[in-house]
Length: 381
Image (cartoon, rainbow, N blue to C red; front, side, top):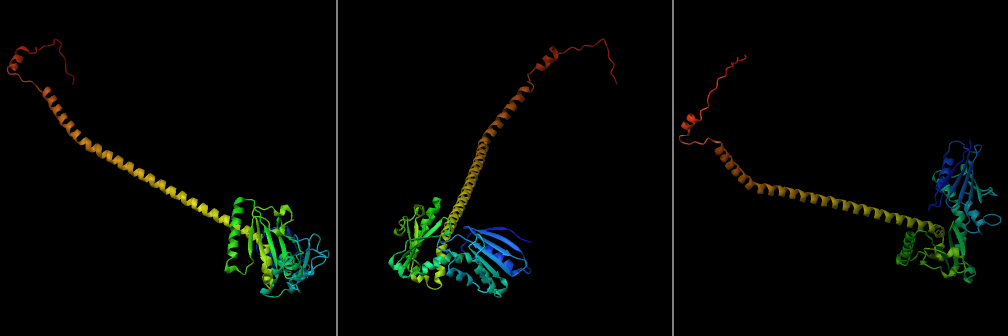
């Protein structure tokens, strides 16, 4: 059964493609033959095509399409001989270059998993195969840097070489006597990113000039193009973050330092973007944390003020009640005395007035006559 799929992967600072490495490891560890037809796309217009047939379980074909670092990389007859040697040197027994390459791709490899070394060495070989695209792109830059001591550089015959590792991110190589200068035009859209990047470049210059980093390539940042780029296209020299230059001397390209120097130059843009993004995220986290702290402080302050006002109001009410109570005590006693006096006065008014001799006068002259009714009545039981 044929399998088709598309996988997207963001560019990273690793040489090997993580997605491609994962697919190759699954094919290598598969217990049975699998027919697969898989397309893998990565950032920077990079495309991989992995094909495996069920009839031959150990053979896998890997086709690679990648933007060219310079137009001079791909010669009329294909890649340069040095680039092919770099690819086949990964594992001569297991890696074979198929010519011509599959249509639409610059390179097609035939991988024989049965001839891979055993143990952990096989994992290292697969990792190296996953980094073939980086090897292809770095091959041209290696050739340029290895010519730092050539006689042509003394004559000053070379004009700036424009290299493009990722779209819209070109950089220039200027060959001078006994040194090579790599110039990176920096462009950011957002103003905060420009401020962070320029600050980083200035700090990089200060650190690079210290005694601790005396062996590192000297770094220089300038808001205007260096003299070596005069005559280049205006669109390549229009930047918002200035120009960063590194001076590469012969001691920076000796032996194993060559690979490290080449990879650092190819990923300088990615490193700067990573630093800017990380710094901006850090600043935003600090600002958010600070804001939360201020909000919490204001909230506590408001609660404290409310509590204090409530306490003052409670004390005020309690004091007012006490004042009323204290003020009302003498009034109550006065009112009580007045009430008692008034009550006694009323009692005296309602009591019988005694006049000497009035009793006899009342019995004699104020005697009420008794009447008898002619009609009797019978009391009802």
